[in-house]
Image (cartoon, rainbow, N blue to C red; front, side):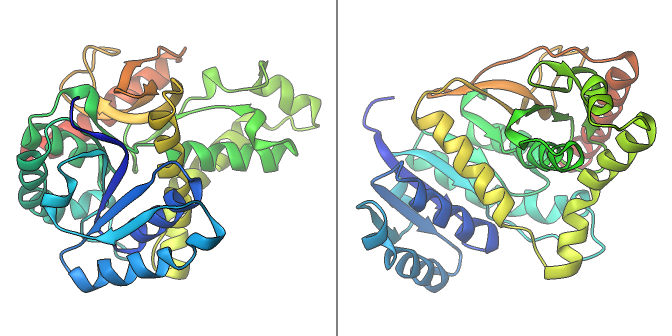
Length: 315
């Protein structure tokens, strides 16, 4: 990866998610240069100025609006561009619109930079991650999606609230599609190594089935609820993007449920979906096997089939 500036990040798409992500990245102090690109150049310029004005309270950084030629040496390219999810619209309804948008964006990125890591955040993230891989010609480890990183954070937050314990001590994953067919992997969920049901009982909760169902549904419907109330979700995903950036830039080898193309994982191949994976300076190193029950494996296969069907329709 010669000629890359490891302290340079590009954010493509300056809508709610792109702008919030750019702000979170600036606050992180991870980079010394950030270029913002948007179809509406003035929007990118406005966001760059607005975020730059907070730099005296943060770390020195160059933030500016640019074009594709400005990303030729960027180490990390974050793609949030795409049509947003409207009230009543599923993530998969968006797919045709956004695959079309990617058809124009991704080749422009690949033309100027073949060595970066590309993080896909636009929805539906699994389909667009798969599309970005096909359109860019990048190696698979260097094109991946934010996936269920946010869903997993929502899951940990809700479990933390339910059990009155720090959500950072909750170890649990949402896997599969970032969307309606996602799976709460209860079999491997624990609180600091204590199986989730044992911890629940310790905290006086015994209605396991009902609670599990309610929490999983709440996670799945979080985005719809927020969109209904305020029109879009962007702070949670911005924090997720920042967390993924940290793992990459610091070569943390953190385990995160990002969306990557699967190869015979529980019999699932040639589709991008989220499984826990080791994330470091080269992107996705490897997926991590977690213990799943038979019913969770079946649900994961069904989630993959849902995505595969869409991929076959649009790509």
